[in-house]
Image (cartoon, rainbow, N blue to C red; front, top):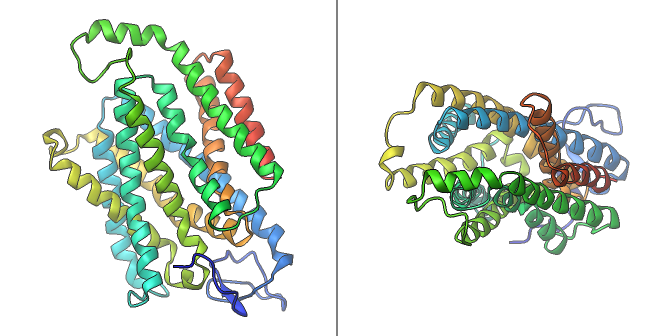
Length: 360
Protein backbone atom coordinates (compact mmCIF):
# COMPACT_ATOMS: atom_id res chain seq x y z
CA UNK A 1 0.00 0.00 0.00
CA UNK A 2 1.14 3.51 -0.73
CA UNK A 3 1.68 5.49 2.46
CA UNK A 4 1.29 8.79 0.66
CA UNK A 5 -1.83 9.97 -1.11
CA UNK A 6 -1.93 10.61 -4.84
CA UNK A 7 -2.35 14.37 -4.25
CA UNK A 8 -6.08 14.76 -4.87
CA UNK A 9 -7.60 18.21 -5.06
CA UNK A 10 -8.46 18.15 -1.36
CA UNK A 11 -7.31 16.21 1.69
CA UNK A 12 -9.21 15.48 4.87
CA UNK A 13 -7.55 15.74 8.23
CA UNK A 14 -8.52 15.76 11.89
CA UNK A 15 -7.61 19.27 12.99
CA UNK A 16 -8.46 21.21 16.13
CA UNK A 17 -10.96 24.07 15.79
CA UNK A 18 -8.28 26.74 16.20
CA UNK A 19 -7.62 26.44 12.45
CA UNK A 20 -9.89 28.49 10.20
CA UNK A 21 -11.03 28.27 6.62
CA UNK A 22 -10.46 31.25 4.29
CA UNK A 23 -13.95 32.57 5.10
CA UNK A 24 -13.11 32.63 8.81
CA UNK A 25 -15.25 29.65 9.83
CA UNK A 26 -13.64 27.10 12.15
CA UNK A 27 -12.07 24.04 10.57
CA UNK A 28 -13.29 20.79 12.15
CA UNK A 29 -12.80 17.08 11.36
CA UNK A 30 -14.09 16.24 7.93
CA UNK A 31 -13.70 19.67 6.36
CA UNK A 32 -11.92 19.80 3.04
CA UNK A 33 -8.44 21.20 3.39
CA UNK A 34 -6.70 22.68 0.33
CA UNK A 35 -3.91 20.39 -0.87
CA UNK A 36 -1.33 23.18 -0.49
CA UNK A 37 -2.24 25.03 2.73
CA UNK A 38 1.16 26.66 3.18
CA UNK A 39 -0.35 29.40 5.31
CA UNK A 40 -1.44 26.74 7.83
CA UNK A 41 1.92 24.96 8.11
CA UNK A 42 3.39 27.19 10.87
CA UNK A 43 0.21 26.76 12.91
CA UNK A 44 0.26 23.00 12.30
CA UNK A 45 3.85 22.72 13.48
CA UNK A 46 3.27 24.91 16.53
CA UNK A 47 0.13 23.04 17.56
CA UNK A 48 1.66 19.63 16.83
CA UNK A 49 4.80 20.41 18.83
CA UNK A 50 2.70 21.77 21.71
CA UNK A 51 0.60 18.60 21.83
CA UNK A 52 3.73 16.41 21.76
CA UNK A 53 5.41 18.41 24.53
CA UNK A 54 2.28 17.90 26.65
CA UNK A 55 2.45 14.20 25.74
CA UNK A 56 6.03 14.02 27.05
CA UNK A 57 4.94 15.62 30.34
CA UNK A 58 2.09 13.11 30.59
CA UNK A 59 4.55 10.26 30.01
CA UNK A 60 6.65 11.69 32.83
CA UNK A 61 3.63 11.58 35.16
CA UNK A 62 3.04 7.96 34.16
CA UNK A 63 6.69 7.33 34.97
CA UNK A 64 6.13 8.79 38.43
CA UNK A 65 3.27 6.34 38.98
CA UNK A 66 5.33 3.43 37.61
CA UNK A 67 8.19 4.37 39.93
CA UNK A 68 5.83 4.37 42.92
CA UNK A 69 4.32 1.04 41.83
CA UNK A 70 7.78 -0.51 41.57
CA UNK A 71 8.60 0.61 45.12
CA UNK A 72 5.36 -1.07 46.25
CA UNK A 73 6.33 -4.32 44.45
CA UNK A 74 3.33 -4.06 42.10
CA UNK A 75 3.28 -6.13 38.91
CA UNK A 76 3.82 -3.93 35.85
CA UNK A 77 2.30 -6.63 33.64
CA UNK A 78 -0.96 -6.75 35.57
CA UNK A 79 -1.11 -2.93 35.51
CA UNK A 80 -0.63 -3.04 31.72
CA UNK A 81 -3.47 -5.54 31.44
CA UNK A 82 -5.80 -3.41 33.58
CA UNK A 83 -5.04 -0.32 31.47
CA UNK A 84 -5.55 -2.26 28.23
CA UNK A 85 -8.89 -3.68 29.42
CA UNK A 86 -10.03 -0.20 30.52
CA UNK A 87 -9.17 1.28 27.12
CA UNK A 88 -10.86 -1.55 25.19
CA UNK A 89 -14.05 -1.36 27.29
CA UNK A 90 -14.18 2.44 27.07
CA UNK A 91 -13.54 2.25 23.34
CA UNK A 92 -16.34 -0.26 22.91
CA UNK A 93 -18.71 2.14 24.67
CA UNK A 94 -17.62 5.19 22.64
CA UNK A 95 -17.25 3.61 19.17
CA UNK A 96 -21.00 3.69 18.33
CA UNK A 97 -20.97 7.45 18.91
CA UNK A 98 -18.11 8.18 16.50
CA UNK A 99 -18.91 10.33 13.45
CA UNK A 100 -17.66 7.54 11.16
CA UNK A 101 -16.60 3.95 11.64
CA UNK A 102 -13.87 2.21 9.62
CA UNK A 103 -14.98 0.64 6.35
CA UNK A 104 -13.30 -2.75 6.63
CA UNK A 105 -14.11 -3.48 2.98
CA UNK A 106 -11.40 -0.95 2.13
CA UNK A 107 -8.05 -2.80 2.00
CA UNK A 108 -6.13 0.32 3.06
CA UNK A 109 -8.31 0.70 6.14
CA UNK A 110 -7.78 -2.98 7.01
CA UNK A 111 -4.03 -2.60 6.59
CA UNK A 112 -3.80 0.48 8.82
CA UNK A 113 -6.11 -1.10 11.42
CA UNK A 114 -3.87 -4.18 11.52
CA UNK A 115 -0.77 -2.02 12.05
CA UNK A 116 -2.48 -0.35 15.02
CA UNK A 117 -3.28 -3.73 16.58
CA UNK A 118 0.35 -4.73 15.93
CA UNK A 119 1.42 -1.50 17.69
CA UNK A 120 -0.26 -2.74 20.88
CA UNK A 121 1.53 -6.09 20.64
CA UNK A 122 4.90 -4.43 19.96
CA UNK A 123 4.37 -2.03 22.88
CA UNK A 124 3.85 -4.91 25.27
CA UNK A 125 6.79 -6.87 23.86
CA UNK A 126 9.04 -3.82 24.15
CA UNK A 127 8.26 -3.47 27.85
CA UNK A 128 8.58 -7.23 28.38
CA UNK A 129 12.08 -7.31 26.84
CA UNK A 130 13.07 -4.15 28.72
CA UNK A 131 12.21 -5.79 32.05
CA UNK A 132 14.17 -8.89 30.99
CA UNK A 133 17.23 -6.81 30.10
CA UNK A 134 17.06 -4.87 33.38
CA UNK A 135 16.76 -8.12 35.35
CA UNK A 136 19.87 -9.57 33.69
CA UNK A 137 22.18 -6.57 33.50
CA UNK A 138 22.72 -2.80 33.62
CA UNK A 139 19.46 -0.91 33.95
CA UNK A 140 20.64 2.43 32.56
CA UNK A 141 21.95 1.12 29.25
CA UNK A 142 18.90 -1.12 28.85
CA UNK A 143 16.64 1.89 29.40
CA UNK A 144 18.72 3.94 26.92
CA UNK A 145 18.32 1.20 24.28
CA UNK A 146 14.56 1.24 24.87
CA UNK A 147 14.19 5.02 24.51
CA UNK A 148 16.60 5.20 21.56
CA UNK A 149 13.93 3.33 19.59
CA UNK A 150 12.74 6.81 18.55
CA UNK A 151 15.35 6.39 15.78
CA UNK A 152 12.93 3.99 14.05
CA UNK A 153 10.13 6.48 13.24
CA UNK A 154 12.71 9.21 12.60
CA UNK A 155 14.74 7.20 10.10
CA UNK A 156 11.78 5.53 8.39
CA UNK A 157 9.99 8.87 8.19
CA UNK A 158 12.88 10.20 6.12
CA UNK A 159 13.57 7.08 4.02
CA UNK A 160 10.05 5.76 3.45
CA UNK A 161 7.81 8.80 3.73
CA UNK A 162 10.02 11.56 2.38
CA UNK A 163 10.26 13.77 5.47
CA UNK A 164 13.02 16.35 5.18
CA UNK A 165 16.32 15.50 6.87
CA UNK A 166 17.23 19.08 7.72
CA UNK A 167 20.54 19.82 9.49
CA UNK A 168 18.62 20.85 12.64
CA UNK A 169 16.66 17.60 12.72
CA UNK A 170 19.78 15.49 12.23
CA UNK A 171 21.66 17.46 14.89
CA UNK A 172 18.69 17.25 17.26
CA UNK A 173 18.26 13.47 16.95
CA UNK A 174 22.04 13.05 17.42
CA UNK A 175 21.97 15.13 20.61
CA UNK A 176 18.97 13.22 21.96
CA UNK A 177 20.62 9.85 21.25
CA UNK A 178 23.90 10.97 22.83
CA UNK A 179 21.97 12.25 25.83
CA UNK A 180 20.19 8.92 26.31
CA UNK A 181 23.49 7.02 26.13
CA UNK A 182 25.06 9.42 28.63
CA UNK A 183 22.13 8.84 30.98
CA UNK A 184 22.52 5.08 30.61
CA UNK A 185 26.28 4.92 31.11
CA UNK A 186 26.25 7.47 33.94
CA UNK A 187 23.43 5.70 35.74
CA UNK A 188 25.10 2.31 35.49
CA UNK A 189 28.41 3.60 36.83
CA UNK A 190 26.58 5.25 39.73
CA UNK A 191 24.70 2.05 40.53
CA UNK A 192 27.67 -0.29 40.25
CA UNK A 193 27.86 -0.82 44.02
CA UNK A 194 24.13 -1.59 44.16
CA UNK A 195 24.56 -4.19 41.45
CA UNK A 196 27.46 -5.74 43.35
CA UNK A 197 25.23 -6.00 46.43
CA UNK A 198 22.50 -7.61 44.35
CA UNK A 199 24.90 -10.35 43.24
CA UNK A 200 25.88 -11.05 46.83
CA UNK A 201 22.28 -11.16 48.04
CA UNK A 202 21.10 -13.33 45.13
CA UNK A 203 24.19 -15.38 44.14
CA UNK A 204 22.11 -18.25 42.75
CA UNK A 205 19.47 -16.20 40.96
CA UNK A 206 19.52 -16.85 37.19
CA UNK A 207 17.61 -13.58 36.64
CA UNK A 208 20.45 -11.25 37.65
CA UNK A 209 23.79 -11.76 35.95
CA UNK A 210 25.59 -8.44 35.73
CA UNK A 211 28.94 -9.88 34.74
CA UNK A 212 27.92 -11.28 31.36
CA UNK A 213 26.35 -9.99 28.16
CA UNK A 214 23.17 -12.02 28.56
CA UNK A 215 21.26 -8.72 28.93
CA UNK A 216 22.26 -7.50 25.47
CA UNK A 217 19.91 -9.69 23.44
CA UNK A 218 16.73 -8.66 25.33
CA UNK A 219 17.95 -5.04 25.28
CA UNK A 220 18.28 -5.17 21.49
CA UNK A 221 14.88 -6.86 21.29
CA UNK A 222 13.42 -4.03 23.42
CA UNK A 223 14.99 -1.50 21.06
CA UNK A 224 13.54 -3.21 17.98
CA UNK A 225 10.05 -3.89 19.31
CA UNK A 226 9.63 -0.46 20.89
CA UNK A 227 10.83 1.11 17.63
CA UNK A 228 8.26 -0.88 15.69
CA UNK A 229 5.60 0.17 18.22
CA UNK A 230 6.45 3.84 17.69
CA UNK A 231 6.47 3.51 13.92
CA UNK A 232 3.22 1.54 13.62
CA UNK A 233 1.52 3.96 16.02
CA UNK A 234 2.46 6.94 13.86
CA UNK A 235 1.88 5.17 10.52
CA UNK A 236 -1.87 5.83 10.44
CA UNK A 237 -1.18 9.57 10.31
CA UNK A 238 0.42 9.05 6.89
CA UNK A 239 -2.87 7.89 5.33
CA UNK A 240 -4.69 11.19 5.07
CA UNK A 241 -7.48 9.88 2.85
CA UNK A 242 -8.81 7.48 5.50
CA UNK A 243 -8.28 9.57 8.65
CA UNK A 244 -11.97 10.56 8.89
CA UNK A 245 -12.73 6.84 9.38
CA UNK A 246 -10.05 6.43 12.06
CA UNK A 247 -10.92 8.71 14.96
CA UNK A 248 -8.68 8.89 18.00
CA UNK A 249 -11.08 6.60 19.87
CA UNK A 250 -10.99 4.02 17.06
CA UNK A 251 -7.22 4.05 16.80
CA UNK A 252 -6.75 3.85 20.58
CA UNK A 253 -9.17 0.93 20.84
CA UNK A 254 -7.29 -0.97 18.14
CA UNK A 255 -3.92 -0.37 19.81
CA UNK A 256 -5.05 -1.48 23.25
CA UNK A 257 -6.87 -4.49 21.83
CA UNK A 258 -3.47 -5.68 20.62
CA UNK A 259 -1.89 -4.96 24.00
CA UNK A 260 -4.67 -6.78 25.88
CA UNK A 261 -4.29 -9.80 23.59
CA UNK A 262 -0.52 -9.86 24.19
CA UNK A 263 -1.01 -9.59 27.98
CA UNK A 264 -3.57 -12.40 28.04
CA UNK A 265 -1.41 -14.63 25.85
CA UNK A 266 1.56 -14.07 28.17
CA UNK A 267 -0.64 -14.88 31.18
CA UNK A 268 -1.22 -18.38 29.76
CA UNK A 269 2.42 -19.18 30.54
CA UNK A 270 2.78 -17.29 33.84
CA UNK A 271 0.82 -18.43 36.89
CA UNK A 272 1.69 -15.27 38.82
CA UNK A 273 -0.01 -13.17 36.14
CA UNK A 274 -3.27 -15.09 36.44
CA UNK A 275 -3.93 -14.13 40.04
CA UNK A 276 -6.22 -11.21 40.83
CA UNK A 277 -4.54 -7.79 40.98
CA UNK A 278 -3.87 -6.26 44.37
CA UNK A 279 -5.50 -3.04 45.59
CA UNK A 280 -2.36 -1.03 44.82
CA UNK A 281 -2.24 -2.51 41.30
CA UNK A 282 -5.89 -1.58 40.72
CA UNK A 283 -5.25 1.96 41.94
CA UNK A 284 -2.13 2.31 39.78
CA UNK A 285 -3.97 0.84 36.80
CA UNK A 286 -6.77 3.39 37.20
CA UNK A 287 -4.36 6.33 37.45
CA UNK A 288 -2.28 5.20 34.47
CA UNK A 289 -5.54 4.54 32.63
CA UNK A 290 -6.66 8.14 33.15
CA UNK A 291 -3.36 9.44 31.81
CA UNK A 292 -3.60 6.98 28.90
CA UNK A 293 -7.07 8.26 28.01
CA UNK A 294 -5.78 11.84 27.95
CA UNK A 295 -2.75 10.89 25.88
CA UNK A 296 -4.60 8.67 23.39
CA UNK A 297 -7.76 10.72 22.86
CA UNK A 298 -6.28 14.22 22.90
CA UNK A 299 -2.53 14.22 22.28
CA UNK A 300 -0.65 11.41 20.55
CA UNK A 301 -2.73 10.87 17.40
CA UNK A 302 -3.63 14.55 16.95
CA UNK A 303 0.03 15.48 17.38
CA UNK A 304 1.19 12.81 14.92
CA UNK A 305 -1.48 13.85 12.39
CA UNK A 306 -0.44 17.48 12.46
CA UNK A 307 3.28 16.75 12.27
CA UNK A 308 2.82 14.32 9.37
CA UNK A 309 0.63 16.83 7.52
CA UNK A 310 3.31 19.50 7.99
CA UNK A 311 6.01 17.17 6.63
CA UNK A 312 7.64 16.75 10.05
CA UNK A 313 6.37 13.29 11.01
CA UNK A 314 9.93 12.07 11.56
CA UNK A 315 10.35 14.20 14.69
CA UNK A 316 6.95 13.39 16.20
CA UNK A 317 8.35 10.82 18.66
CA UNK A 318 11.77 12.31 19.51
CA UNK A 319 10.05 15.41 20.96
CA UNK A 320 7.95 13.69 23.68
CA UNK A 321 10.76 11.22 24.45
CA UNK A 322 13.18 14.08 25.10
CA UNK A 323 10.64 16.05 27.15
CA UNK A 324 9.84 12.95 29.21
CA UNK A 325 13.52 12.28 29.95
CA UNK A 326 14.29 15.84 31.00
CA UNK A 327 11.12 16.37 33.07
CA UNK A 328 11.47 13.03 34.89
CA UNK A 329 15.08 13.86 35.69
CA UNK A 330 14.00 17.18 37.21
CA UNK A 331 11.31 15.35 39.21
CA UNK A 332 13.87 12.86 40.50
CA UNK A 333 16.28 15.61 41.56
CA UNK A 334 13.73 18.01 43.07
CA UNK A 335 11.20 15.63 44.65
CA UNK A 336 13.05 12.35 45.18
CA UNK A 337 16.35 14.16 45.87
CA UNK A 338 18.30 11.66 43.82
CA UNK A 339 21.96 12.40 43.12
CA UNK A 340 23.02 12.39 39.51
CA UNK A 341 26.47 11.73 38.14
CA UNK A 342 28.24 14.24 35.85
CA UNK A 343 27.47 12.00 32.86
CA UNK A 344 23.77 12.04 33.70
CA UNK A 345 23.76 15.83 33.95
CA UNK A 346 25.55 15.93 30.59
CA UNK A 347 22.85 13.63 29.25
CA UNK A 348 20.12 16.01 30.42
CA UNK A 349 21.91 18.95 28.78
CA UNK A 350 22.20 16.99 25.51
CA UNK A 351 18.52 15.99 25.63
CA UNK A 352 17.39 19.55 26.35
CA UNK A 353 19.54 20.90 23.52
CA UNK A 354 18.27 18.14 21.23
CA UNK A 355 14.63 19.08 21.86
CA UNK A 356 15.33 22.72 21.10
CA UNK A 357 17.39 22.05 17.97
CA UNK A 358 15.11 19.39 16.47
CA UNK A 359 12.10 21.72 16.38
CA UNK A 360 13.96 24.61 14.73
